[in-house]
Image (tube, rainbow, N blue to C red; front, side):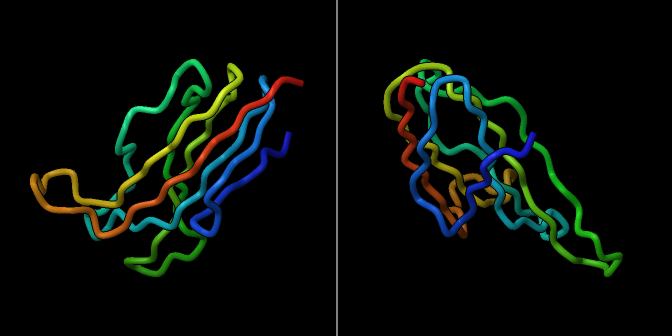
Length: 108
């Protein structure tokens, strides 16, 4: 089953209860940076299914891949997914990138 895919070019997501969707963001953990959820989202509206890293197809050293975040719509309503790109060990340092998605889930 192909899931709808949202990237850093998107800012809103529309889904129906029971639908799953994927957020795909460029990432390069060889630099120490990775994407993480920045804030809580409404778990009555969506749930995180899994978060994985997809390595690049090239074997070039230092090449970046993508962080993949799969969510499932579990209830009607609105919520926001906020992600930040940062080094987890750098406390008090602002992320170098952020990405937000407004999510609206309706009934089938």
